[in-house]
Image (cartoon, rainbow, N blue to C red; front, top):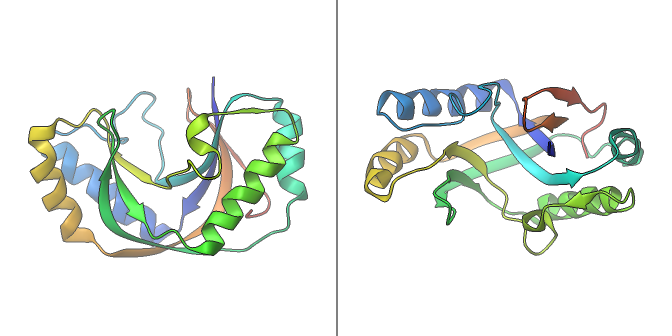
Length: 174
C-alpha cells in the first residue's frame, strides 16, 4: 500500500474537476471517477510513499508550520509516458518550496519516497484520465480547454491511502 500526501482543492475547484471527470466519462474515457476504488478526490500530491511509519509521518508533517491555503492556476494539459493525462498547474516558487519542505520532513522519518516525488523530479499535476489512448487525446483536450484556465485554492491537506482512498486529514496545510 502506498500513501500520498495531498493538497485538496476547495469546493469550487473540486466541483470543476469532477464535472470534467464526468464529461470525459460520458465520452468513454476512464477517469479517477471510476478508477480502482472509486473514492478519488481532485488533488495535487506533494509526495507518494512506498514504505513508511504512519505515526512518524503524521508527526513529522504536523510539526511543519501551517503555510495556509495556496492558489493553484491550472492552465494546460499534460500526459505522462504511461498514458495518464492531467491538469498542469503553474509551478510557483512557493509551491515548489512547500513540496520540498514536505519531502524533507518525510525523509527524516525514513520513509521511502517514490522517485518521481523527489525535489527536482516532481511534476505537480491533478490527474484526469488514466490509460488515455493517443487517439482520444483530441477529445480530452477539447474538454479540458473548455474549462481552462482553472484558478482554485488548495485549502486543506490529507494523507491518502492510494489502495483504498481512505483519507486522514492533516490539521495543518504544509
